[in-house]
Image (cartoon, rainbow, N blue to C red):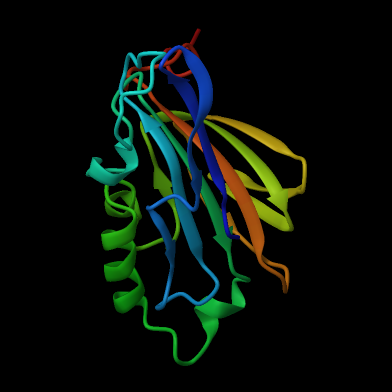
Length: 185
């Protein structure tokens, strides 16, 4: 999904458009045909309301935000059939993911493709298509307009349909500590 980012801020005492166009961290995968990812914006743990004057997406080394920071990402998932194609090369796809998704790609489990756990609270919105959220105890089918709030859960996104599906995700970096349920409360 091509993303148009309109960046607005106060400049010389007036609110105005600072930038209008495609974000610079937009990638279309070669090794996983149909997979697209755009880092729309990211913030440090305590962002200023004033525009910093530079695009933080260009200089960030990781998509995984530190505690209190955010990453706003739009992802398009191809149908799962792409991964079963005879010419699909998992090693080449993993290397490409490591280049395009630093910080998150390293968390993917080698024995369970796509499964990963991030130290984040995520707001996920299905924008288009259908996705299945795979969890430890099963899957949840989601369609356009559905919203998921995740709290550091082990998960994977699956597209069992025959069409691409697009997801908007806002990752908020969180401290890793036991929650009430894990402490038996």
